[in-house]
Length: 246
Ligand SMILES: [Zn+2]
Image (tube, rainbow, N blue to C red; front, side, top):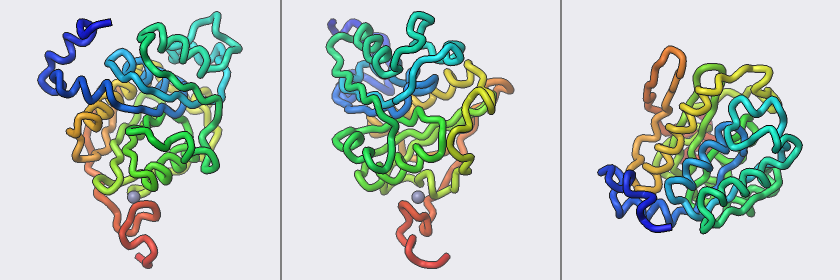
């Protein structure tokens, strides 16, 4: 595989060959291999990310196939990380794909996330995102928050010490286990959110993400808006005055 693969993207002035080198030396962890996570992982490996760790403990079900494009009918019953790893290696056989058959918890997060340069959130619950938020702040690793609900969703860059974090704006806790089947999710909205998440990831890798705006995307209306989220000095994760009373 030569540089031919990347000719069309290095021609984009936002990337250039210098940016491509940074993409190829990034070390990315994708938490969750559902619709969002598997789309993100696929796009990133296609764009040249060579070192990628994928984390999920789920099995592929029929109800995943409408939106989780990594998987096929013949994969039903298999582990998501196993199928995803095989598929990612078909895209780039030189990639280093590390599959972790676990659910991210406070107990295992530091071991899984340490030494990565970027964390991508492909989870579907607040508990996992709280773990990512706290541990990424502790380890000083940037991450990209994503959420999809119905026809809309959110993407936000969270860069420790630079931008606001997830706790700064009190992202609502809807509890664990509210699955896509119950709350509903439009497959094309998952793709829209995944695309903006990968774009945000590339901006972080290239050092171009400064704002940490919360990007709201509604695939149906359609509408996209960047909402500024200031840092909260009383934030219980990243605030400089977190131990003081507000
Ligand atoms: Zn914060």
